[in-house]
Image (tube, rainbow, N blue to C red; front, side, top):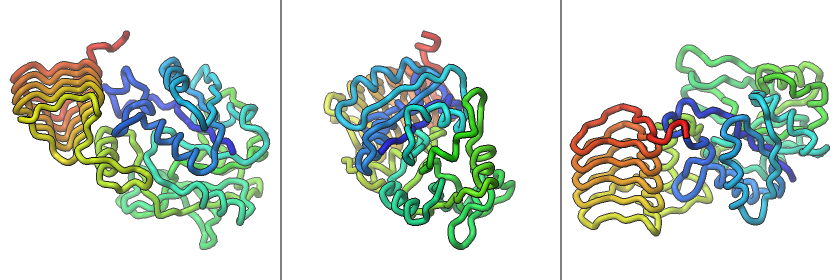
Length: 337
């Protein structure tokens, strides 16, 4: 079976990390977000993946070359941003004639794709949309379904706090329903393609699953997903907490809280305190420094005695010794390279 993984987002809300690193390639505990996504697809019988992106495309080539075994990866160049719908339509020649999964590459989930496919086949649906129930849907568009799960409408983000089912960013699609679309402009799959498919009489159903699901689009969500993986809340993930890469150096006189990851080659000096934080590969936290609720980017340096709280430090960014940084975004020193 094949899948299209959408990796064309700009990662705006995760800046400054995404000024130099594609969002889907950010580490989530021990390996890139995209590795987790591809590994999950393999567990559910997907052996071929199609990807494309108009942004930092060159960053994906080393990742693809480093992958071994299943799934095989086909890259389709997207010269201009095409939106979720346009990007999927753009890959149809590589996908073929059989139903395929399409999903966002920046989601942390343990959605049972095997069960979703069985549901799709049982209903003889043209499109199945994975839905996730939330207590507060203000950050999402709502999806209305009837008692049998047939999708009736897509609603805009509500202004008030309201519970409901939201699009979880994973679809199972019969490619024949996309034949009228051409990838020559930006197309929204929710606002244009799916409503058109419904209007023309094709069956579109919602698959509501009791699965873990987290949109990794903000520093807060990225941190929370990391902590949830350390806590074993994501099926298929099992890690020691805190998690420290084998070649990281953590002084025995430092303190790491439970919700901490320390990436490859990172260094935590004596007397440093790190809690509820991600310290990415090659970063340094100096003696006596305090880091809490923050992301320290690759190769970044937190000087001795500095305090970092609720902040994001870009790749190679520097917090000088003794400085205090709260709720800030420290730019990468490698921006523009």
